[in-house]
Length: 227
Image 1 (spheres, one colour):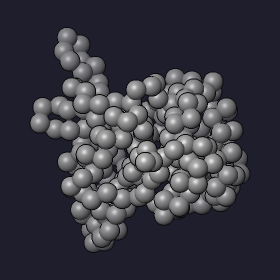
Image 2 (cartoon, rainbow, N blue to C red):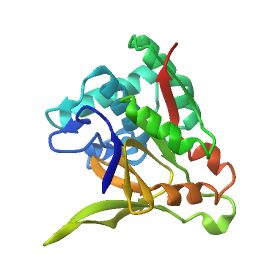
Image 3 (tube, rainbow, N blue to C red):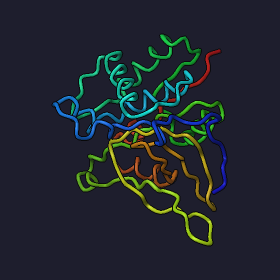
Image 4 (cartoon, rainbow, N blue to C red):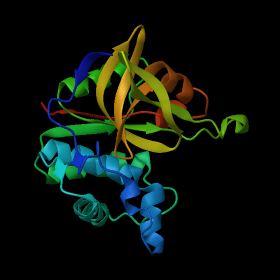
């Protein structure tokens, strides 16, 4: 794939992962610990973006990362629940986190669909990771089980790596770390569950149009420098 732009520094690394993951809480005992595994993607996204901006990008193992995750839970007073983090809480809380960290950045949730790809590329070129939400489709009911494809690059012996479907999901926060092109297709490189995936930009745009308020819920936290 041809790289259009990518973050300038190495991304969050927990041992050998690509980014943090709520799956670090898999098998943990306790109601709230299980909720963190099931619905912690928003906290992971916030934690990783803030950590990247502050230069804290490497963690020895999952135990060290979970300490950071739990400190973020306390800082934003999140009670782990099955619904996870809402875009409205991220919209309200992340500016406060930036201010407390002394970062000269401001942010807001939501960009028009036409400008969304441009703003994602702008942020990446400014070395700012992008929190993106894959919405859950609810209306009309026939779309409720639809999911967005995540692609991975698979090595092919004697040939260039090829994109193949590696996962699919909905109602999930990810972090965009780069923008790439393959033929006439644009792909967002993302971190999710501690792995590197790619989202087809056209598929994402079409996915958000399949539900009520999809363009609002399926959007980004737009962060930019002040002044």
